[in-house]
Amino acid sequence: MDELIYLLKLSQEELKKVLYEYLITKKMNPIFEDGFVYAPGNIPVLLVAHMDTVFKEQPKQIIYNKFEDRIYNPNGGLGGDDRCGIYAILSLLDKYRPYVLFTEDEEIGCIGALKTVRTLQAPNVKYTIEFDRRGKNDCVFYSCGNKKFMHYIEQFGFKKDYGSCSDISILGRVWNIASVNLSCGYYNEHTVIEYVKFRQLQRTINRACMLLDDIQKVPYFDYQDVRYKQSLSDKIMMLLGLDKVFGESESGKVKTLEARKK
Ligand SMILES: [Zn+2]
Image 1 (cartoon, rainbow, N blue to C red):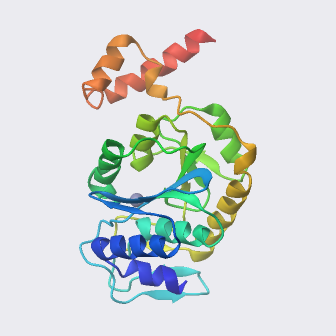
Image 2 (tube, rainbow, N blue to C red; image 1 turned 180 degrees about the vertical axis):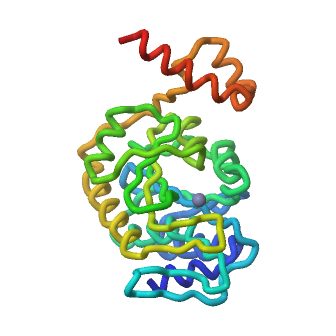
């Protein structure tokens, strides 16, 4: 709890330095780059969270209501999105050595993730977990279409939900690594009434421990981009960056194609 409150009060710049130095103390050989901090691990899974928040200023005062299990800023705006994700990863580093990636500027268009894939080769991992989803039980796969991977993650008590885009949408697609975004206990993100349910965050961390304990038993999961189940012209449009314009009709086409196969 105290660690999360400490993280909530740091600016992105301060947090980036703190994380880098922390990874050094853990002897993880981190790299500090424009857009991200990254460190390789010794178990084949990558954990991702972003360091920025939508708020210009960090909270000066933070209150925990233990009866409601609710952390909030009485002056509005907390930044649980995504300091909960940072906290989850640091908690897991007490026991495990996963690959870790902390990105900058997710909230203004996944800038850090884009810089990461321009700088780094794909890490040698079986899949990626991002901790950057509201609520308590969601698993979100975006355009990662690996059904075996989805089924595997759902076995740990998460329910599939949908989202528009986050860092793993870029990392997973470019690196061809199946990726999931898990709920980490924040609510009303991007608003002044944001709050965090600490026990729900803890519960996700506990389930992430189970996932990491199981990592040697699972195969490598590839990304299987649902958007690639398209015609050549759609692929070309996507590569040219025109897919955003035609995003709506594309998803319709994907369904039609899949229906035809059956
Ligand atoms: Zn976020």
